[in-house]
Image (cartoon, rainbow, N blue to C red; front, side, top):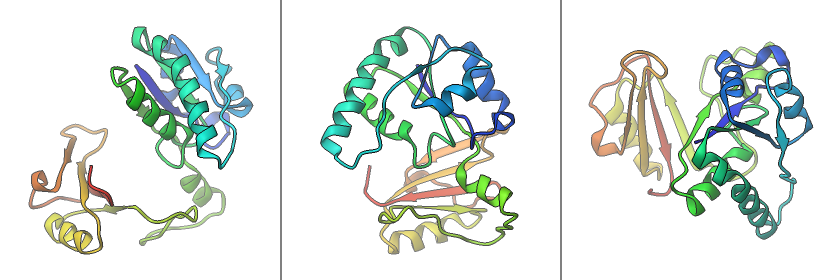
Length: 205
């Protein structure tokens, strides 16, 4: 198994307990750079894999494939952690690595452990109080949307469909008892609650 582990914004005290346990229990840990290496050092040894910041996707794909080749055999036979700054599912090196793994090594199971992201870190350090809808952008086209407190699910899905979204995930009580995750709008219940979330994406999967 390959687990992407979020190490938070860089302060050692902001690693989660689950991240620390994953580092300690893994058979092998890889990181994408020195900063991540320093964060995991109190818990385990790690090996740096090169992920240069390039815009040439042909070169990047070669690098991601090479790194996937390195990881694949170990992840088949044990637990491999890829530790990275921030959260593994938001603007992350792990997202690209996971896609390549699924393409070339579909037998390798992947999972993620969330970390404190740059978004929540920013709000904390700047004393910004965000209590209404907001937008996060890196300058690329907007392809997904998250709706919190999704009580009226069918109204939300209908509105999002009109906006061009066609792939939906419903999640409720994440990481709690009675957790539910439902993929596909045809399976989403009529009503949600305060702990319900709808994720919408453009481009049918």
